[in-house]
Image (cartoon, rainbow, N blue to C red):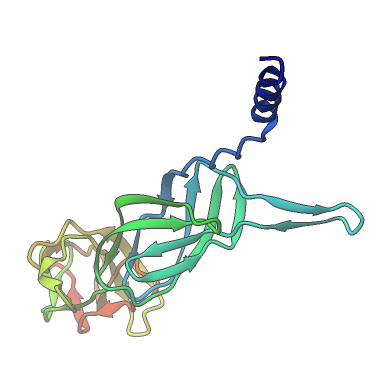
Length: 227
C-alpha cells in the first residue's frame, strides 16, 4: 500500500499540470454590407462590417503597422479582397463589373479558415439604356406627355425611375428644368411635362443613377407661343 500511494499522487500531479489546448476562436458574423446593390456594368466599392477585428504586427523601430488578416468577400463565384481596414470591424474592397444579374448570398472567409455568411444580402441589377418616342411641336404652357422606353436585358422588368431634363438649344447647354420621373411599368414610362418658355429648339434628356450609362435624348422640337 505504501508503494501504490506515491504512484497515484504522481499521476494526479501529472494530469493537473498538463496544459489545456487553446479554445478555438468564435466564428465571425457579417453585420452589414454597404452599399448592397450595383449594376452589372459598374465597379462598386463596398464596406463589409464584421464583429471581429484583424490582427496587426506593430514594428515600433520602423514605426510601421502591418495588417495580418485580410478577409475575402465572395459574391457568387466572384472573390473580392477586403484589403482596406477602416476600423470598428469595417473592411473595404472593390466589387468588379460583370457579375450576373441576381440576388446573392455573401460569404466572408478569414485567413485562418473561419467563414461567415449572410443570405440574400447583395443584389446586382441590370444596366439599362433608354429611348424616347418622337415628340411633336408643343404650345407654351400646355401639358404634353412623353413616352420613355427602357432597353436592355430584362428591360420589361424595370420599375425604377429616371431623371427627365428639358434642354433649350441644340447644343444642350441650357437646362430649363429637371424632374424625377415616376416609376416605370413593364419597361415603359409616360411622363407629363409642360414648358412655359417658347423656343425654336428643345430636347428632352433622360438619365439614371448608373455612372456607366449614357444620357438619352429625344428628337428636337419647337415650343410655340400662345396665340
